Image 1 (cartoon, rainbow, N blue to C red):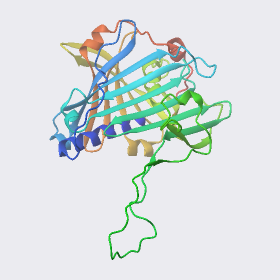
Image 2 (image 1 turned 180 degrees about the vertical axis):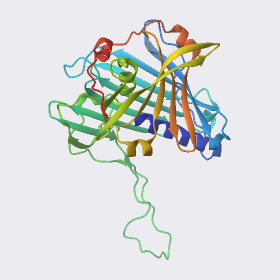
Image 3 (image 1 turned 90 degrees about the horizontal axis):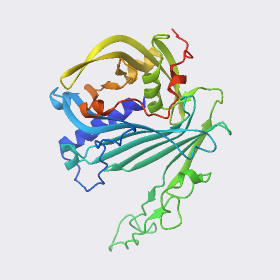
Image 4 (image 1 turned 30 degrees about the vertical axis):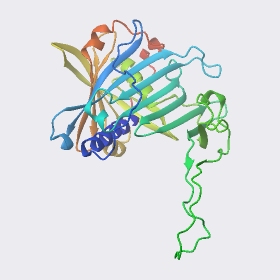
Length: 344
């Protein structure tokens, strides 16, 4: 699951920070922990790790936010919602040696039955931009990535392997890789042209897309988990688009518990998300989520299995107190309908 891969990235970032192998640099502040305006569907968490690398002491690594909003312009004629996950180390010690910003944003149908566009962006020490466009009309999943620089050879190719005199050094001219086999669609050309003539992204590849799927993305799966009708069906399977694959995940209600938040104890529904195949679930791990047992269904805590430890996202008390009612553009009534069939 993207969520687990996302947490592995965070652990890698943390390990580099404690090793001191990376030099600090100035990175734009994202202010992820800043509260959103009223009537905005935003929740703010602290990402923590406990395990071998911290002597099994819980250590906070980053702030994380989840936001959903209506995509006012739609997407190629389709009504869509924007789901956004952001992570920033700017408020923690890891920023001094490994400043890291990460964003996952996706455009999905309000009922989470279709995903249209996913972008995964990293800035700071790690610079990446990947995009996946699910073209339902052409029945293809199209992948794009950040255009790479091509570093030239330092020496002329004609120089002998053994030098009598110093070889002539080439001019250090950096070139950009050529375009892919297909042009980048206009809705992905938001960045300025590189050197005034190259698109920021390039086409990578395409794979087939089955048009009869009910399909969402990993962050959309978290929202589907939030609004599912567990009373009607305590377990269900969902098809999830991740890069060039379609993966099956299972959501299962485990029971009810109370979650500590500030000085209070919040009644919660406890659910687990994992791959439908047990072998794949054992290899990848799982995510356990505690949802407030009320009409808001606020995810209070996420707990993620990772190598040599655990990671968790804890909802900030201020975010919980500020959140009055959902303002999401998702079709919550449709998501609560008994349309998922219990399997296994």
